Image 1: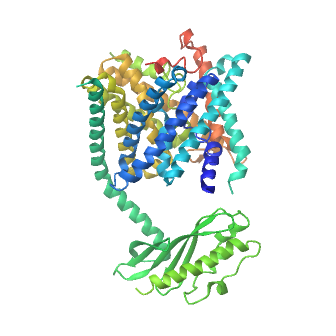
Image 2: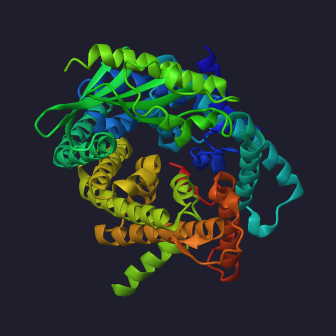
Length: 191
Length: 174
Length: 218
């Protein structure tokens, strides 16, 4: 149990997918314009990533390992994520049309979800750990997205110098978030 | 054939083609990679068992064992990799024992002990005490616990004692 | 013919620079730019994979139903990236360790470019290759600059060779995540300044991230 809570904590905050490993930066720039966007994207990502890590773990341990097909992992994972992504998108289009409009849906082609699946292999998780990991990573990602959206809404009011408009300011803000995380929380974790 | 189905088939077909291609590439690369890994493992073992030519993996009592053999397939010794609860977290270390049951090496691979305190287990002064200790000795008589880091060092000492027992039972009758 | 090709390449580097204009491929960019050598390798590999992907896909374009084009392209890039991964394992295992997971993430990034180049542009094969070459070079330039700065100011050495003297105090933050973000952000601002100054943009593309990259729309 302790291990699970530890995983949650670590991957949401300390090894945050976006701020520490740069995995969710692609959609960060895109979907953090306002809070609705961010929330929608966050929800969709949580769903997709948790599902993906689950399926990835299953495929890896039940199919790829026993058959010694390790080298196919990237290909298989990408295919699976593409299918799952499509499924999630259809789901959202039917049941949450408002969200679907808000979010630009090309989740499958998101570095973060693929990265999560790949890391499941690297880290030798058990099934439960893998799912929690996927959940935690996506929650961490959504968290960053939401906070960034809040900041951007403010910035839209206060104005940003012309050269910093667009990605530049987002990256710098992200850098400050990242610094807060690594410096502020780093002391708790590392020996 | 409905469009949907056709698309799905093309998708799966493409996936299979990709898979076959990758299988080919992998077959080409496999040998080289395995050879290199073998060389790396042997290099590590060489440190403790000069003249090593091959090794065999085994698992016993939750520990990982590598039985080391020389050129004439003679048994040289065994390298045990095991983990033990230390002060803050698990310590992962390796113990090399030669065929007479004497310790020829101890190396800490991973630990989360406090750097300046429990971290002493990595120090040569501490580890060197283990060299030459035989399976007939009582480890705690030959190696001193370091005051101020009692839990960490005691953990290693006790663990080595246990590992030596396992080694004696399983491997020294070669 | 020649000048058109050059124009295509030029465009990939400047107007359509994947990093500074289209904000793509940032994951591998940030992830691998701690050292100049890794950055350079990543850039070159990216360019290579992009070109191959494009080549294969342009050749296959006719035989694939529209609906499934994108997924098939994804498969092609995944296969290609895995091949590169295996080849690296054989010849340059050290570099492969460095690049690690970011190499595999290239598979996803390539797809984006396909959408623009192959779908939208519908140019003849040869020209689209040069398009993509330009884009790849643009990425490589960006990552080399970023990695160069990060390694130089972060460790005081460039490609392992000491540049500043022993009294130089490296900016440690640049070697880790926060520094990467901030360095890239500043670099982007610099790029924006250059673009504005030299009028390399049309006026209406100077707006927020996401809008300028209208390729997101299907």
